[in-house]
Length: 494
Image (cartoon, rainbow, N blue to C red; front, side, top):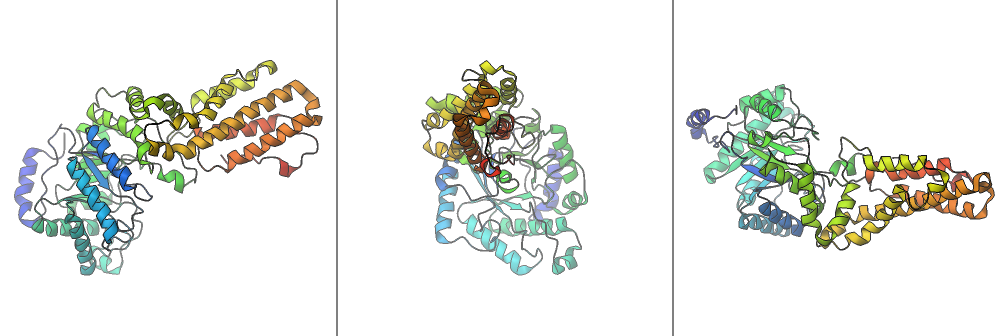
């Protein structure tokens, strides 16, 4: 059962309209979500305008209806929330709002004042309204008031008014914004991203939101974790009851910003959406995917997400992914599919692809006379070396430019892997004499140099399987006579 029945909605409307708080429920029980689409909510610079417009077109083609503008590194969205957009940035934002309107896509602007705002301070409230009015003049009618990743406590003025209750302070500001903007703009709508936006356990923060956030304001939730491997309908329904507000899923897939920030080994996530309950879209008010910093490459995963939202009961991840690769890859679809195989591991399972692990294990089990160019691993390395050239034929040149750092790494790893196999073959052929063989010594030096190049690459592919294999080779084959420690590649950090 959904928390917001029609009878409850009527009762709340009667009690809250006069205060300016009421927002009608976003959807009827069991209907499709009112908000489906993308939240550009990663840590990083906003997409180029051309990419954002293409994403809007993508949403329209795939039956989704919502775009939330929320890139954390737009200073006017977060760090400098209280400053008006300068003319050039405002003009670009206006064009994006107009493009969304022309495509019948709901454009939602997320503003994140929590890093510096004093919630009860009149001047800060006035600055927030002034900023929102600038956006509303562009044609924005829905705003997401966001407090995700706010770790500072309340200052003295706010503690005097709200005690230590952060949720109360945020909800009170939301009530002020909603009442103030509704008077001037009757169509104004508000969404709310809480500081506690994940988990499946009631808590004091949610209890305060339940009591203080204006009724009918949808609340964002990322699932049982920030990066959720699975999300069920039962979890969403329970969380919605605890929050006492309609729930919008902010699904952090295929976002990859944390791979830049945490381990500084950027990764692409090109696999299909998995682990989502078929019933989930029908029990929430909205479902938004948070994409990668790479807008064009994100379309592979987003295509599968759109299929899931359109047909959750019959969604098949592999079939949806196959269709996405064909639709996006065009004449280079086969190359794109192969490339995606090396870039499909997700945050909660960064182990190398099982098929690649099997090929490496099989290689080491092969007899000495069978370690050459015909092994499955050797064929994989040849594929890796050739993918970059094949991907250059993608219909969308901007997609190729987005993924090229990773395809270049694959090409280098393929070259190093192929050469490593030849070194293993030479070592087995020469036996103990390898250590004194001049040609072997030259090959070993070249391999060590290639491994150092591979280790210097910051982009990660295939769960680090190939660098690990290369270091295995250096550890297993004889070290030539006269080699100093400086000549040898150091163990890979991955």
